[in-house]
Length: 289
Image 1 (tube, helix red, strand yellow):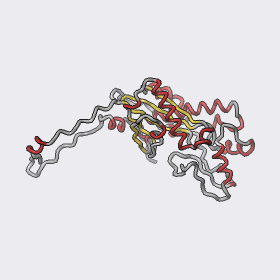
Image 2 (cartoon, one colour):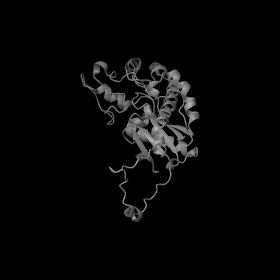
Image 3 (cartoon, one colour):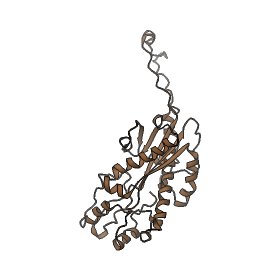
């Protein structure tokens, strides 16, 4: 089994220009540098890029594949010029048990300059789809950062995954860097994942008080066996994503999967549906995701 590596600030430092190494010039066989001094003197100087602000915003979503509750987008802002270390034990939230996430969330919040979590509701997911709601939740989180005084326009956002679903959801220009497994490898994104996961989990635990049949204290809205059985026994609540359940329940026997809003490529999407025999069972019980 491959050991799990702790996230680092390597990408964050590269983004702001602190992690680059200067290459030694290639010399000729006689040891001389292959430089035309006349050409070098007459060549126009390359314009220097303005210095980076140092601000990097880690961005991660949670709840994209749940059957109930909102999708959440977490943001964690750091100034790479002054951030020297990563909190001990910080990892992608999916790699942490719930008690450990609860311990690390306040540490991750204090580590960053600022943080925010934005939500898009189950009703909004039903109305406009999960793709648009990722951007909507992200835009709401960015609004919170702006209200907190963060200069978002000067920052680079590291977004977990390969698809930039955030830029098109806002009117301001953004600098977004997508990175597959950024929640595993990049400390700012790992912090965002823990912050957003704990915030959404607590929200689902609160909702469990109003809708106790579904076991949200334990499954957080994901498709555990307990949750699926409760939906079949009691029907869906107002906090369920009804369009998703309709597609799942309508899947014919033996149907391998259905696409949910076009997100059937496995990039962070937990639910798919198999057949009527386990109408909702094709979604793994992934309450830690």
